[in-house]
Image (tube, rainbow, N blue to C red; front, side, top):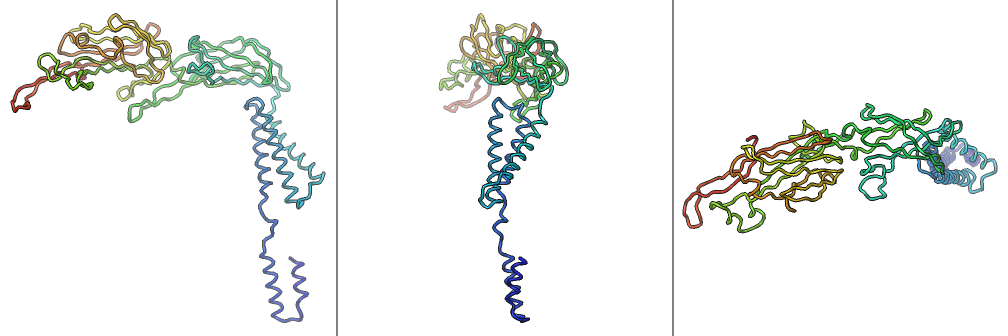
Length: 440
């Protein structure tokens, strides 16, 4: 701008105020015209941002999948091209960068990219432990979990590093803990294979060896009675030559202990299922009667503090379920066969109600006790003693020991009332009810 001022000064002829003012105005106008070279260096920002991403990825590259280095290298080259383009367009006015400028770009990128790589460089070797969550056999579980063998399998990868030694196989020290307490420790013989990902092998553990208690537990419940679960995962750690890594196992498959059962019996009149003639076949001229009852159960993980407000959460484990329905005099009207549950498949063989499989815990913790291919227990069997109080008891056992039980009580009764029929005649009419009560 000083050159422009001299030019204006040369135009001044004498000390005229008008000439001085004109020269000053011209200077002001020139000073306010924006310089096109002042626009933000977008290419420089893009180059710096992509370089920063590359530095972060290089530092954590040991956690990334195989062949991730190729993608990082491609991103680094793209960032360097942006820097080259910035120098060409912004610094050189469209002229190709000189040899010294290209060398400066190359050295800068090598130094900056090398900092996180060296910082994360593995000198003494490393161990990486994880599990395969994919489900290639489509059994509903991750490939890390074998429901038939009752085992879990984890992948282990070992890198010798620059100064460490290669582990070709042998005993690996493994510890399992839950909520900070060790549940199992020992050695597992692991066969390692060499490949593009380094030395890899698998660690297989029997669930019975380390399992202590449920990995999911009821914390609270929603307004609709749905349990809210809290995770207490099992942590597996593997140690090779003093270098170790740990990983948490998924919690649902390792929630295997029954801690709560619930039950409910409901009485039905055949007419209540949509029959317009309901009640006409009732004995004793009843307006309606209890033709059969349904018995529903829930089994799984529960909490004594929330039991009155929610049903148990589903589990996957091995356990047995027993159910009895008894009259107030102690006689049993339904003594159902033991239901054996293996993971989520339930089987039974009852003399009266037959046999069959069903699923418990696969999608819901709720199930119905089935009889002859239906959910109904007829009045002639379940309520054969007649009117009075009945007790329904459902219990669960594991390992030969009862782990949860629950009972509820119901009154089967005849009710009456005064009413007027369609012809205006007043009289007494009767009906049957089946209602839950607190005690018999």
